[in-house]
Amino acid sequence: MGKHVLLIEDEPNIIEAIRFILERDGWTVSTHSDGADAVDIVDREGPDIVILDVMLPNRSGYDILRDLRAAEGTAALPVLLLTAKGQSRDREMAETYGASRFMTKPFSNQEVLDSVRDLVAS
Amino acid sequence: MGSDTLTGTRIRERRAGMGLRQADLARQVGISPSYLNLIEHNRRGIGGKLLIDISRVLGVEVAALTEGAEAALLEALRAAAARVEDAGAELDRAEELAGRFPGWARSVAALHDRISALEEAVDSLSDRLTHDPFLAESVHEILSTVTAIRSASSILAQTPDIEPEWRERFHGNIFRDSQRLSETSQALVAHFDRLSREETGFATAPDATAAFAEAHGYHFPALEAGGDPEPLIEAAPALDAPAAARMARGYLDRYAADARAVPLDRFEPAAERLGYDPARLAADFDTDLLTVFRRLASLPTREGRPEFGLVACDGSGTVTFRKPLPGFSLPRYGAACPLWPLYQALIRPTAPVRAVMETPDETRFLAYAMCQPVAPSGFGGPQVVEAGMLFLDAGEAAPAPGETVFAVGTSCRICPRADCVARREPSILREEF
Image (cartoon, rainbow over all chains, first blue to last red):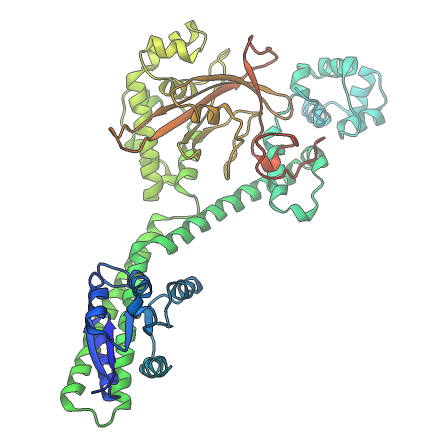
């Protein structure tokens, strides 16, 4: 069984595409679509990496990331942050909140795959 | 009243208007034509007996030749110069510019106004692009949909051995996402179309409403007679934009309510009888001071009646209504002078303020100001207030005993008072302009 990616994203067709490319690369992929209990899901599943969308229903990805960084068990967990906003201040926010990497939509499948591989390897 | 170096210009215009030759006027007042020429081009000062003699020959009061009707133009020229400080405009020669080249001076002032209006429109559009929730949501939707289509199509293009059921699923996803993209794009185009209909031209809603009120002389006989505001709005092409029409409707509805509460046929004689004193009028009509301020500022012009200016602001200090007077300019854009009694009233709600304002050119205006709640929100709710300042030319009258004299300006950038305690930014003017 491959390493575990938790994908927190609310767009079903993006979920499906990312799940497809990661699973074909040997990863185990679980998904979640609601921001409200996302931190609990991370705690419960203990993934090797989280792919986290910024704009989620009920709670922002930035808030989730802040809570993850504040908790001892997830402070160093690799988190790839996905957002539709690519302005410099969004990039700064991603850094401030502690994103391991920041990727703006529309991204390519290969970019996602390369990032996941890099972040888990390092 | 300070000396006015445009006196020569007025002499020249009056003389030319009478068809009187320069040499003839010079002879009648006992000076050489060349000296009169220097006076008329504002290169020599004039006063005393010579000024009285010239005004007698020209058949006008001395004051008509000396008092600054161009104060607003000079103010506008200084404001235009403040826009490009590094250009090195000769601020001490603004009066000369206005006197010798009045057309060019008016053009510079009009361009300054136009640029300010365009800047305000750009700010408004920028705010719209930054904060419009529909735009933000649409852009997010488009980028998410494009991401999904890109991912699914690249999977199909780059995975030759893809299982048939996955291929079918991604084809379906692309089809549905492309439909969604199409619908979002159409909604976005419709949204922009609606915005462009709402924002005809570059006049903002406050500007359009102010111009509308000014064009009517701030007086609406139809509303005084109990009429409906709607025909006035429909007859004003500048109020075509929905936002401008809404704002003008608010202004006129309030005017109509004031006219019902304080009818003109009773108010005019009462105002005259009570010496146009706002406090006595408020008591007489059992109404609040701000209503009286608005009624006085909307009185029709009559011989012997003082002319009233009015400026109002909300709790943030933002000017929400302006009716200027000659000699007392109100900034159209940016912040006003914080020493205006208007703002003194704002920081002491419900306490009426009466004060004399003195402008940098030593013209005095009597001001009444008041701040009062406009939207009671109940216990615990936010306090919403409005302040108003009514003002009129104080002439040569000295302040009443104990009356405060406020040394005010229009706004800091074009105010020469170097030692002002309320200065928030440097002035572009030298002290001696």
